[in-house]
Image (tube, rainbow, N blue to C red):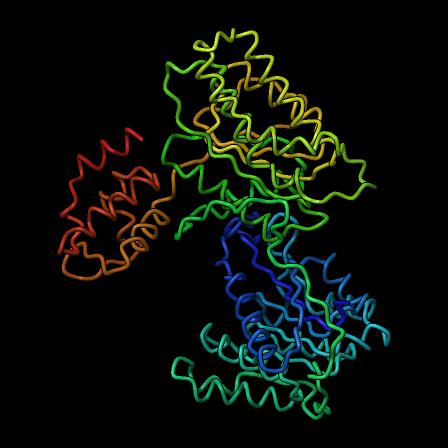
Length: 530
């Protein structure tokens, strides 16, 4: 039973639509929130309480979309709803399905709450916490809808202050204290914290102001709570490769990719551009975005990343194909070996051989073909057989997944043939490819070829500063981002993230913060060779 859970409803949109000076709609990047950090903070607070009180309180998570919000408020199957996102006095910031900000203006929020909140749902849902600056107006709407306890922020507060307040609030609630006592304890924690701004202690609100807040949200003698699923959902998946520490200037590009895959249902997206332009990091950002939002609606069976090696020009086409099939099989093996519901019609006889097939290395076979007397025809037959088993297993499970193939060049027809079969015979699998040049092959699905352009000078300058993590001087005074964007160093980098990182590394190795210490000709030639 999860009706005693704390539900984290998060919104971290990538872009928002704003009119430009000519009145045309354009997309503006939005600073991302660290949702994983907030989830960990909530889990830590509840775990500390459970260690002393033996009351494990489950935490569930979903992205703040209209569908998820409507479901939560209608069913009322959570005890406390914790919203983490952006807010203004006019609207709550939700997400649409592709990472764009969706404004839930106050009249719309009022209508949603009136149509979903019922006396039945309020038997379980007793508290809402709006962890967002300037959320007082939104909190009033929840109060008017009948939610008995609503916590909000009257104005903007620093992240460290909000974290101190939130941790103390949930620790007290999980230890069985009343809402009023927990709120007071959290404010006192802010006031006494060495890292929080004491003047912000009065920024927190508990509404209704004259309400009875003596209710205990989580009783210490409760024994009917069941732990919810871990988040992000990792069953059937290998761990994704990590993201770069600094992801700058690519929010609109990322939104374009997400929009193509999630909204327009493009089965194949090919991101191409020169080496060092940021193709891999863009693909990894897309993979992580979908992974955090994995649900029955969004790539239910997981996101799988295959990083292809750089081949020698002398390597045969069959060796390249064997490597691709081996890497894909290894990546999706956890999915094929995970428990399956028989009602899904899975081909269990195919799946049962997945582990054996994953251990069979086609690459080793291809490299030793001449020594063991295996002809190209026989090798191709072995590769085709493994492809057929892979596709049969995915199709049998009706796997709804995203397959990311990083650095997969269109080397020959055999690779395209594998992609053709994968797209035709596994209709619920989408593919994201990164490569240097667009594919020339024609596929029987909607394909998006996306050329990744160089970073804008301002974004390039910001990336340089973030990697340096120290003051940068052009002359005697500290430079601004706008001044730095016009500097020859940024021009020499050509908008290449890799060249910018190299420039930052070179500058960080010098004692002087002056950009003039960088060897511009060497930097320019390095950028041209990427």
